[in-house]
Length: 238
Image 1 (cartoon, one colour):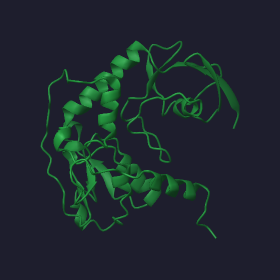
Image 2: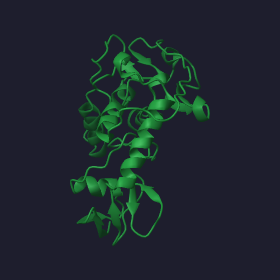
Image 3: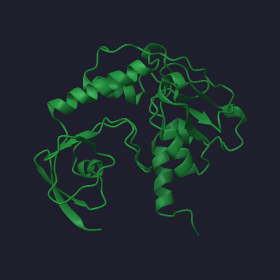
C-alpha cells in the first residue's frame, strides 16, 4: 500500500492508495452521510447519499466506491450536494410505504435519521407505493418489502459474513425487491441459518424480529462489527 495525500474539505488528509474517499474522510473525522454502506462488507454505491465533488470533474462520485489518488481535492458538503442528498431521500421515501408512525423501526431507523439530518419535512414527488406482501413465514423474523430501500445490506451480509447467500434481489425497476431462495417464503428457506445478521444490518423496518412493537426495534450492530472483526483477525482459527 502506498500512502497518498489528498484534500478533503480544505483539510490535508493522508490515506492508503487502496482506500476509498469515504474511509479516508472517516479516518480524518469528516462525516459523509450513507445508507447502503456497512462497515465490514463490500460497498456497492447503491444509495448515492455519499456522493462528493472532485475538483476538475463536473460529475459527482460515490465516496464509498471511489479510490483516493494523490493530490485529489474533494468536497463533501456543498449546496449542490445538500440538494442532491435531500432529493435522494425524498425519492426513497416516495418509492415505498415509509409511514414512520406505524413502522416497527420508528425511532431506530437510519432512513428516518438521514431525512431529519437533511431537513426533509415533505416529499416533492409523487408517491408510488407499490404493494408488496409481508413475509411472516419465518418463526423468528419478518420481512416487509414495503419498508425496503434496496440497499442490499441484507444480501451482502448474508453472503459475505454468514456465507449463506439466502437473500438476493429479484424483479426490475419499481418491482425490485429482496427475495429468499429464488422467491420461496423465508420460512421455507433451506439455506437460512436464522442467524439474524440480515435483520441487524437492515437500516429500516424492512427486516424485523417478530414480537417487536412499534418503536422497539433497536438493532445492536456492535454484534455484527464483532463478528466481522473476529473474521478479519482470524480469532476463531486454531
